[in-house]
Amino acid sequence: MDLAQVLHMNGGVGEESYANNSLLQRKTISLTKLLRDEAITNLCCKTLPNSLAIADLGCSYGPNTLLVISETIKNVEKLYQEMKYKSPEYKVFLNDLPGNDFNNIFRSLDTFKENLHNEIETEMGPCYFFGAPGSFYGRIFPDKSLHFVHSSYSLQFLSKVPEGLDNNKGNIYMSSTSPSNVLKAYYDQYKTDFSYFLKCRAQELVEGGCLFVTLIGRQSEDPSSKECSSVWDLMSMALNDMVLQGIINEEKLKDFNIPIYYPSLSEVKLEILTEGSFVINQLESSQIILNELDNYEDAFEFTSKIPGSLKNDGYSVAQCIRAVAEPLLVSHFGEDVTKEVFNRFQKNVTDHMPKDRTKVTNITIALTRMP
Image 1 (cartoon, helix red, strand yellow):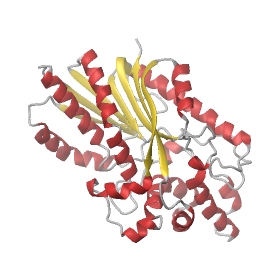
Image 2 (cartoon, helix red, strand yellow; image 1 turned 90 degrees about the vertical axis):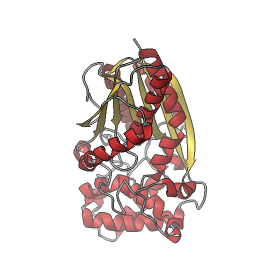
Image 3 (cartoon, rainbow, N blue to C red; image 1 turned 180 degrees about the horizontal axis):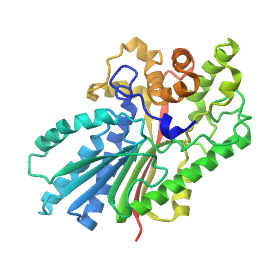
Image 4 (cartoon, rainbow, N blue to C red; image 1 turned 180 degrees about the vertical axis):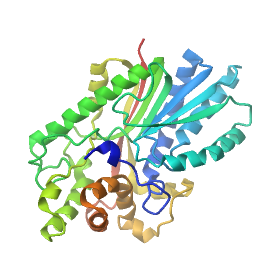
C-alpha cells in the first residue's frame, strides 16, 4: 500500500466527511492556542520578519484547516501594531498528501481573506496562499524559507506500515496479544519517521524559526496498552467476525495493519534531543475527555446535528474514526466491505467502549531552530 496515494481524510461536507467529524481536532486547536500564541510572539519579537512564511503540515480540509492560520495572523497583526511596526506580508503554505481535498480549500480562500480583513479592522499586509502537496516525511520547501511551521493531529501517522508484522495474527495494530517484534517494528518506524521529519524541518526553517506540533500520544510507557489499542481492537473484532463469516479472506486481513504510532512524552523528547537541531521550549502532555465534546458542538459550524441517542450509542466515536481510517480500508478491502466493517465497528464501540470519561492524550511541542 502506497500511503502517500491512499492516506487522506474523508473529503466533502457529508455526514461521514472529516469536516463534519473533527470536533476533537478543533477542541485540541482551541486548547493549544495560548502556547501557540506564545511561540509566534517569541518568534516575531526576536526576528521581526517583514515577510512571514507560515506552513501548516497535514492541513486536511474542513473548518479547522484555516483556523490556526487565522489565529496566527491576528496575533501577529496585534503584536506589530503594539510595537508600531508595519504589517508584514504573509506567505501561507498548506501541505497534505495528494489525496487531500485541496479543491474545497482553494474555493474557500476568497471568503476566508475577506472575513480576516473584516475581523482585523486595520490595514494588514498582503496574504498569499500556496498548496504544497506531498509527504512531510521528506523535504517540501527550500532551505531556510519558513518562519513558523505548524502541525496538528498528523504526526501520529507513520510514513508506511512497519515491516515484519506477519505474525501479528488477528490484530490490525499493536495489541496485548501482539508479539514483541511487532511492538519493536512500530517503534523503529516511528523513530525513523520522526527523526527525519525533524531533520527536514530544520533545513526548511530559518535560524530562530519555530516548529509547533500537537499529536496524539499516550500516558503509558506500554505502546500496546488499552489506552492506545482499544479502538483498533474493536475494529479488529469486526474484521475477524467477517473473516469467520467468509466475507473477508483471512490472508487479506493478515496483510492489513494501521500505520499509526502514539508515542509517549519520553519517546518524543528522546528523538528531539537525538536529532539535535532544536531547542525545546515546550513539551507537555494533556488529556481531552471525548464524552465532553458534545458540549462543544454548537461552536462547530460544519457539524451535522446527530440525534443524542445515536451519540450515546457510540455514533460520534465511530464516525470520527471512520473519517480518518475509511480511505485506508477502502483501498485494501473495497468499498462495499468497508461499509459493513464500519456498521459492525459502530456496534462494537457502542457495546464495549466506556460510557464516560474516554480520554485522548495529546502531546504538544514548541521548538526553536538552533543556529
